[in-house]
Image (cartoon, rainbow, N blue to C red):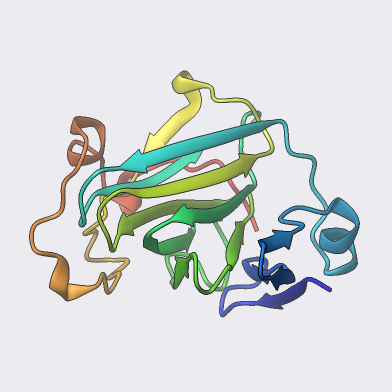
Length: 186
Protein backbone atom coordinates (compact mmCIF):
# COMPACT_ATOMS: atom_id res chain seq x y z
CA UNK A 1 0.00 0.00 0.00
CA UNK A 2 1.27 3.46 -0.89
CA UNK A 3 1.88 5.73 2.11
CA UNK A 4 0.67 9.33 1.65
CA UNK A 5 1.22 12.06 4.24
CA UNK A 6 0.51 15.76 4.06
CA UNK A 7 3.50 18.00 4.78
CA UNK A 8 3.48 21.32 6.68
CA UNK A 9 1.84 23.17 3.77
CA UNK A 10 -1.73 22.01 3.09
CA UNK A 11 -1.95 20.30 -0.29
CA UNK A 12 1.72 19.28 -0.48
CA UNK A 13 2.27 15.56 0.15
CA UNK A 14 5.08 13.07 0.59
CA UNK A 15 4.27 9.78 -1.14
CA UNK A 16 6.12 6.54 -0.43
CA UNK A 17 5.20 3.71 -2.78
CA UNK A 18 5.49 0.14 -1.52
CA UNK A 19 8.60 -1.66 -2.75
CA UNK A 20 8.78 -5.45 -3.05
CA UNK A 21 12.22 -7.02 -3.25
CA UNK A 22 13.90 -10.37 -3.40
CA UNK A 23 17.21 -11.82 -4.62
CA UNK A 24 16.35 -10.74 -8.21
CA UNK A 25 15.87 -7.05 -7.37
CA UNK A 26 12.63 -5.18 -6.67
CA UNK A 27 9.24 -4.14 -8.04
CA UNK A 28 7.37 -0.94 -7.21
CA UNK A 29 4.20 0.65 -8.49
CA UNK A 30 5.46 4.24 -8.58
CA UNK A 31 2.20 5.80 -9.79
CA UNK A 32 -1.36 4.71 -9.14
CA UNK A 33 -4.15 7.25 -9.68
CA UNK A 34 -6.56 5.32 -7.42
CA UNK A 35 -4.06 5.33 -4.52
CA UNK A 36 -3.50 9.07 -4.95
CA UNK A 37 -7.24 9.75 -5.12
CA UNK A 38 -7.75 7.70 -1.94
CA UNK A 39 -5.09 9.90 -0.29
CA UNK A 40 -6.87 13.12 -1.32
CA UNK A 41 -4.93 13.89 -4.52
CA UNK A 42 -7.02 14.23 -7.66
CA UNK A 43 -5.24 15.21 -10.85
CA UNK A 44 -4.60 13.98 -14.36
CA UNK A 45 -1.00 13.94 -15.51
CA UNK A 46 -0.28 14.65 -19.19
CA UNK A 47 3.52 14.79 -19.46
CA UNK A 48 6.57 13.12 -17.91
CA UNK A 49 9.85 15.03 -17.56
CA UNK A 50 13.30 13.58 -16.82
CA UNK A 51 16.28 15.70 -15.77
CA UNK A 52 19.87 14.68 -15.13
CA UNK A 53 22.25 16.92 -13.22
CA UNK A 54 25.89 15.98 -13.52
CA UNK A 55 27.13 17.80 -10.43
CA UNK A 56 26.24 18.17 -6.77
CA UNK A 57 24.75 21.63 -6.11
CA UNK A 58 22.79 22.05 -9.34
CA UNK A 59 19.74 24.14 -8.42
CA UNK A 60 16.66 24.08 -10.64
CA UNK A 61 13.87 26.48 -9.75
CA UNK A 62 11.88 28.02 -8.30
CA UNK A 63 9.46 27.45 -11.20
CA UNK A 64 5.73 27.58 -11.85
CA UNK A 65 3.39 28.08 -14.79
CA UNK A 66 0.47 30.51 -14.81
CA UNK A 67 -3.09 29.42 -15.59
CA UNK A 68 -4.37 27.99 -17.86
CA UNK A 69 -1.10 25.99 -17.97
CA UNK A 70 -0.59 25.74 -14.19
CA UNK A 71 0.87 22.37 -13.22
CA UNK A 72 0.47 19.84 -10.45
CA UNK A 73 3.75 17.93 -10.13
CA UNK A 74 4.65 14.48 -8.84
CA UNK A 75 8.43 14.35 -8.39
CA UNK A 76 10.71 11.39 -7.69
CA UNK A 77 14.41 10.56 -7.86
CA UNK A 78 15.64 7.52 -9.80
CA UNK A 79 19.36 8.11 -9.19
CA UNK A 80 21.05 10.18 -6.49
CA UNK A 81 19.20 12.58 -4.18
CA UNK A 82 17.76 16.09 -4.05
CA UNK A 83 16.48 18.61 -1.55
CA UNK A 84 13.06 19.50 -2.98
CA UNK A 85 11.11 22.65 -2.11
CA UNK A 86 7.52 23.86 -2.58
CA UNK A 87 6.46 27.48 -1.89
CA UNK A 88 2.86 28.66 -1.49
CA UNK A 89 2.28 31.47 -4.01
CA UNK A 90 -1.53 31.68 -3.72
CA UNK A 91 -2.66 35.23 -3.03
CA UNK A 92 -4.74 35.39 0.17
CA UNK A 93 -3.44 32.08 1.49
CA UNK A 94 -2.63 32.01 5.22
CA UNK A 95 0.63 30.26 4.24
CA UNK A 96 1.53 32.61 1.33
CA UNK A 97 5.31 32.76 0.88
CA UNK A 98 5.96 29.83 3.23
CA UNK A 99 7.99 26.86 2.05
CA UNK A 100 8.41 23.21 2.85
CA UNK A 101 11.44 21.10 1.97
CA UNK A 102 11.97 17.37 1.71
CA UNK A 103 14.94 15.18 0.77
CA UNK A 104 14.02 12.77 -2.02
CA UNK A 105 16.35 9.85 -2.64
CA UNK A 106 16.53 6.35 -4.05
CA UNK A 107 16.98 4.71 -0.60
CA UNK A 108 13.94 6.59 0.80
CA UNK A 109 11.95 5.78 -2.37
CA UNK A 110 9.79 8.81 -1.66
CA UNK A 111 8.08 11.35 -3.88
CA UNK A 112 6.61 14.82 -3.42
CA UNK A 113 3.30 16.07 -4.80
CA UNK A 114 3.29 19.83 -5.47
CA UNK A 115 -0.11 21.26 -6.49
CA UNK A 116 -0.97 24.25 -8.67
CA UNK A 117 -0.42 27.51 -6.82
CA UNK A 118 2.99 26.46 -5.51
CA UNK A 119 6.42 27.25 -6.94
CA UNK A 120 8.79 24.30 -7.08
CA UNK A 121 12.54 23.77 -7.14
CA UNK A 122 15.30 21.44 -6.05
CA UNK A 123 19.03 21.19 -5.56
CA UNK A 124 21.06 18.05 -6.21
CA UNK A 125 22.79 16.50 -3.20
CA UNK A 126 24.91 14.09 -5.29
CA UNK A 127 26.50 14.09 -8.74
CA UNK A 128 24.71 12.37 -11.62
CA UNK A 129 21.28 12.77 -10.03
CA UNK A 130 18.24 11.93 -12.15
CA UNK A 131 14.75 13.24 -11.42
CA UNK A 132 11.50 12.18 -13.07
CA UNK A 133 8.34 14.18 -12.61
CA UNK A 134 4.82 14.03 -13.91
CA UNK A 135 2.96 17.27 -14.67
CA UNK A 136 -0.73 17.97 -15.19
CA UNK A 137 -0.31 20.55 -17.99
CA UNK A 138 1.99 20.70 -20.98
CA UNK A 139 5.05 22.93 -20.90
CA UNK A 140 4.14 26.44 -22.05
CA UNK A 141 7.22 28.71 -21.96
CA UNK A 142 5.20 31.92 -22.34
CA UNK A 143 3.35 31.04 -19.09
CA UNK A 144 6.44 29.94 -17.14
CA UNK A 145 7.77 32.11 -14.31
CA UNK A 146 10.72 31.83 -11.92
CA UNK A 147 11.33 33.13 -8.41
CA UNK A 148 14.83 33.65 -7.01
CA UNK A 149 16.02 30.68 -4.96
CA UNK A 150 17.48 33.10 -2.38
CA UNK A 151 14.46 35.40 -2.05
CA UNK A 152 14.86 36.81 1.50
CA UNK A 153 11.08 37.07 1.98
CA UNK A 154 10.80 33.30 1.53
CA UNK A 155 13.99 32.37 3.40
CA UNK A 156 14.53 28.83 2.17
CA UNK A 157 17.12 26.99 4.25
CA UNK A 158 19.02 25.19 1.50
CA UNK A 159 21.59 22.57 2.55
CA UNK A 160 24.76 24.42 3.50
CA UNK A 161 27.41 21.89 2.48
CA UNK A 162 26.91 22.26 -1.28
CA UNK A 163 29.17 25.25 -1.97
CA UNK A 164 28.12 27.60 -4.74
CA UNK A 165 24.96 26.57 -6.55
CA UNK A 166 25.00 26.00 -10.30
CA UNK A 167 22.07 27.84 -11.90
CA UNK A 168 20.72 28.28 -15.42
CA UNK A 169 20.68 31.83 -16.78
CA UNK A 170 16.88 31.83 -16.46
CA UNK A 171 17.10 30.97 -12.75
CA UNK A 172 19.89 33.51 -12.16
CA UNK A 173 17.66 36.20 -13.72
CA UNK A 174 14.54 35.22 -11.75
CA UNK A 175 12.62 37.87 -9.83
CA UNK A 176 11.40 38.27 -6.26
CA UNK A 177 8.04 36.87 -5.17
CA UNK A 178 6.86 40.32 -3.94
CA UNK A 179 7.25 41.70 -7.48
CA UNK A 180 5.30 38.90 -9.21
CA UNK A 181 1.74 38.57 -10.33
CA UNK A 182 1.15 34.89 -9.65
CA UNK A 183 -2.56 34.85 -10.62
CA UNK A 184 -3.25 32.13 -8.03
CA UNK A 185 -5.84 32.78 -5.32
CA UNK A 186 -6.54 30.85 -2.18
